[in-house]
Image 1 (cartoon, rainbow, N blue to C red):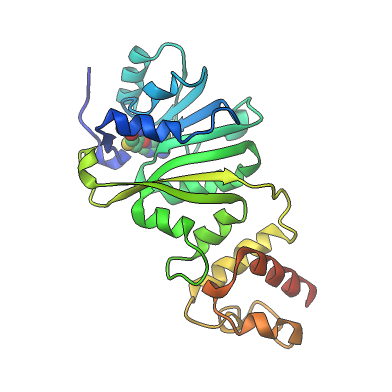
Image 2 (image 1 turned 60 degrees about the vertical axis):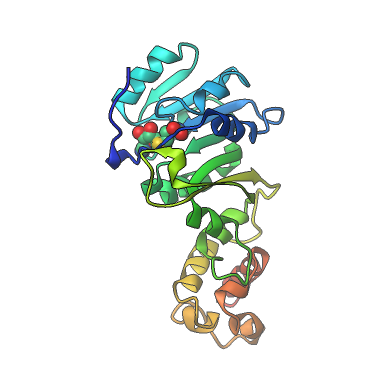
Length: 254
Ligand code: SAH
């Protein structure tokens, strides 16, 4: 039983089972044994998950893949749904980890959904387009440091663990891939207004070559001298905690 890969679902199946096993082994099952897999496809990762934990839910959009998975795995919960539309609050687990060789066309949206549900998530082991993986993990003062780096690193420790070439997938994607691991940190409350923080990070990086004071024109009262130091830097020079500080300074200056 098999099916032809569907481009519109971003289907690129992992060929090597040793690599799949290695990716699964990046999960810290001792810390959290409830696992949600996004986009299991033909079960490349799922087959190894079943030997490390009994608590698995997989979410797959493609009905052909769902049929195949139901045949192959009788003991796991197979949810036929679009991950982006699924109400994660309906998952009865208090804490879970996420794994997946993510469909690249929706990887940013997956990340934002993960951020939204951050307080239920212990860790994420995910395959991303290499460039996106590097953006998530990069540190300040790098050209790759941007909106996803700041928003994700505010709540997760980020590590790049593995690079994969195009030919490790069938059919091969046009881009290289990397597996990263995000581990939830201890931050529950950022220490500033979260919505405002997101808006300031987005606005600051939308004109990343400009000084913050120019990027945030129309948004804040620039007459406050407390802001001067921060405001004359560029977005890529600010750490997560400096963005928090900036958010608080702007909130207080109004
Ligand atoms: N994990 C498998 C397949 C990866 S390909 C492997 O490594 O071989 C990406 C998978 O995500 C495909 O099975 C695709 O059907 C599924 N997918 C794509 N969009 C999805 C969505 N919105 N929700 C859930 N699954 C999705």
